[in-house]
Amino acid sequence: MSFIRFTPKMMIYLPESFEWMILKSGVVNADNREDVLANPENYIESSVWFSWERFFTNYLSSITQNNSIIAYQKHTLKPFYLERRVKESILSVIPNELRGLFE
Image 1 (cartoon, rainbow, N blue to C red):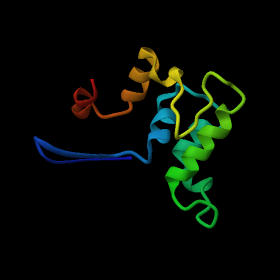
Image 2: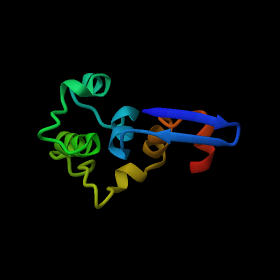
Image 3: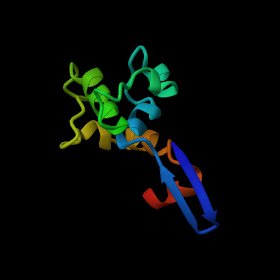
């Protein structure tokens, strides 16, 4: 994840992906989630995954697939992810300087 400030009014926030943000927020858990986020290079094989975004999408989908309430699908966001507390947790991953843009 990168956050770059060019000027007080110009910033760029580059998370790995939306799925990475969900995982980073902790609203979904898996035994090795923290290690995957801390050391993604140990899990993402470039010959298998075109991008880290695709890896994180697959990873999130696979760890939530057995729970119909939180089962993640990129094309349809479950109501769980839109609940206030969950949405706030996901947005908390965004640097403070940018959070106001999403409220």
